[in-house]
Image: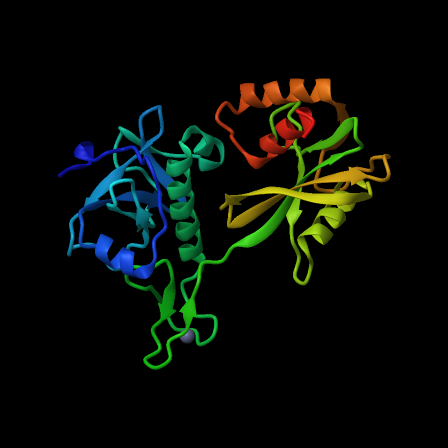
Length: 288
Ligand SMILES: [Zn+2]
């Protein structure tokens, strides 16, 4: 089987337990190709490149992601080489292109990306300094200590993203590196010892100088850039004067009508950018 014979679509992606994973490994499967922290894709429609995985010959160092709709295993082939195979392939900018995929494909790709990024930084055991190796059939690593090897789980850093509003207006900011006129919700990492709600209030004050309360959870999104879990919130402002901090170039209050316009600009500039920021904005515009 060569790459062109492989199905390029994933209709369903399922994480499975260790027993199911062991059985799945006895079946023919396929592997995404991750070069560095970038996914190898083919053509303008960003179809992932796959390599075929023959049962019994799967590299034990190849992390297992889960199974597709047919129960066939999905892996990720991790390569250090950061150049594409040939002229027909290229490397995806997943920050921009992730929204092009179906939810199942996106979840599989995000899992592959998260493991690839973690693997690059998790080369040695933090407890004893020995090399780390992937555990067979799993998404974890262990160190090479002969007795009581230390086990290592992929790390995820919680971050918050929040739509701040005053009932009639929403507060959005923009970073200097973004396309002109693009504004979005405010985001920041949760610090050690801090609650997610505490991070929302602190980040909003640091970034725009506004105090908030009535902080409500909305939904979350895996965002492996580099390894975040984005926790989405709405919050009501209790002060209204904006003082832009170091992280943003500008911040402004927008009416619902203006926000609709911003949303269409995001659609125009990032056509496939299906993100939690846009979901938060869409829900607020709809009055939810
Ligand atoms: Zn160790």
